[in-house]
Structures are given as structure tokens and as C-alpha cells.
Image (cartoon, rainbow, N blue to C red; front, side):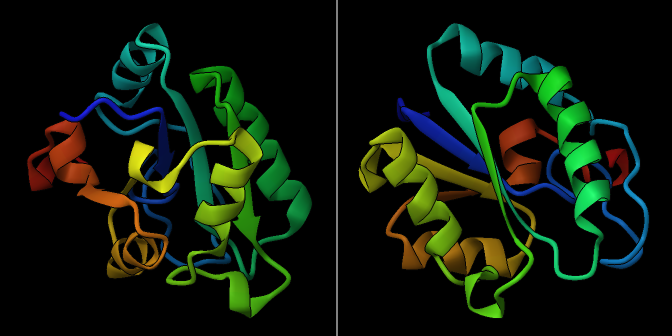
Length: 143
């Protein structure tokens, strides 16, 4: 794997289980290998963040879930698109704002996700993309 300075993860279906709908409650469980892989990234000095579309969830539920996730993974940053539909992936805006915040260039950034919207956001932000199943080494039935 190329040495990245920043890895931006999607949330649902990438770090934690996919929810039945965008309004469904969050399950506080990490998918297989996530904690170990994030520990490896930290040990290598790689920053990592989460960029997630959250249109229908109440902010306090998202903040509680992200607090839990921060304690589990020691996240660098997280951003979400809740108020403005123009910021939702496949828009690159969340990825771009995270790179600006960390002063990291697009060629030093990887987006890891599980949807075509994640892939398109990465393409639009001119960052590399990897499917979560490949990044974490999952077989389809493991999730």
C-alpha cells in the first residue's frame, strides 16, 4: 500500500455496521479488523478521519455515536453532511475540508468506503479510493 498521510473513512458499512435506513439507530459495534487496522495506522503516524452522510439522524445521536467511535479508534477528525444536501457524498466537499483542516494534499490521501457515492467523492476530490472490503480484508459474509 502506498504510504498515505491521511485516510478518510466512510462510517456505515465501513467502520460500523450498515444501518437499515438513514434514520435507524447506530449500532455501537466495529466491523471485523477495524480496530486493529486503525491501531496500525496510528503507529505509522497516519491521520485518519470519518466523512459520513447523515441526513435524517438527529445530531445528538450522531454526536454520541461519534464520541463512542472516537474512544474506540482515536479518530483525528470527523465531518458529516447533515444540513446541506450539496455537501453529501458524492460531493467532494467533506473530503476537501478534511484535507484543508489537516493541511494534507490530495495525493497523500486515501478514501475508504463501501458505496459508489464514496468512490465518486474520492474521484471528485482527486484522492485514491479503496473499497472497505479490500482495505480490511473482509469476505462478504463477515460484515
